[in-house]
Length: 447
Ligand code: SF4
Image (cartoon, rainbow, N blue to C red):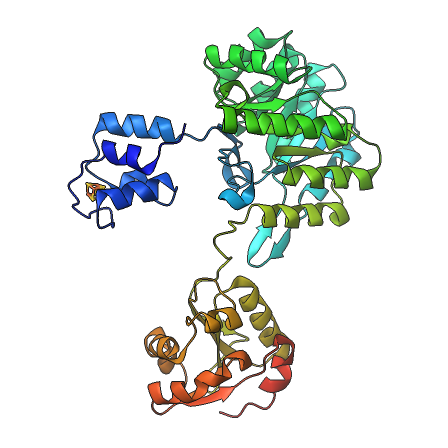
């Protein structure tokens, strides 16, 4: 259970040495309790206290690591029921289903669709997992499909079979990729425990209902398997929804550890209608799914799910921000215009996109305004002449251009007079308010 700031404070050295960056141990304890500092910042905390604090600060829902490399996925690690309480930690992973009974052309086509990816506000949005299901009952056939997928994709893998011997055959091919083993059931749990321990791979516990699931995870954890994902067995929207709420709230509000694990859901087994499947998946991106397995990927359904996931798993207390600095667009030179904007990612991408569209070589200066947009940061006093001027002087733009003209956003027009006072020798020009007007404005540029 999470400790309060005062409980944490009692375990700290209480010397107020400030090496953690905080003025007192109490201030550091409060930040730790709020999840805004890391214990490693205090070099003087004793091993005994560290062990107590780490145990107490472990998330009620276990973090499970699946896969290796670029498409490795972390699920679970959640600490709140509702996003506005703090934030959701580890985004839902999306898996495409491939059966070992599919012909080669279909497997290739699905692997091709697995490569779908989109760039939004500087982030690459893409799926992570391929769920490989043994429907043939033939271990060799299953192993051959796994090998083909492993050779042609960096995907993380879910191995699906109720038969432990078939799972063992799959693990022999891809254990080095740390796949998720699906699934341990009441019938095969002993054998799957051995597989999970031998391969150090995470495992799904699957049962007929939530009570039986808790019994199954107890068996797994008592045997030393700690990385577990839950499948409650439900396959109707209403029942899955209920299970999701029970599974999420049990560890968080009742400290019931046997259900303190992320979940895997199968919209692909809940409907045959691709449109409905997308809608069901969408409901469970919001309602706590750790992994969602889809029957196939199509751009029109995958893209909105990826965008939804990005939004749900964005920290509501921290706006998406771009790094402060000088951005060169369309190969500018010493006579190119210099524009400035704030580091709210959406603002940056709109402004930089419009400059790019204008084809006019330009410098775009992005000032750190804690991720706020132009109007908001100006209203909050974070994009004012006395803050912009020092940034212009230190950012290095004076070494890149011969002229001394700065184009500020129309929404910050009232800062132009103050800026000319703070930046002697500079002429401050007021640009348009709307990004869409930037290309026309830049066409009037003269150094
Ligand atoms: S570094 Fe440790 S001992 Fe020093 S002020 Fe911070 S919490 Fe206290």
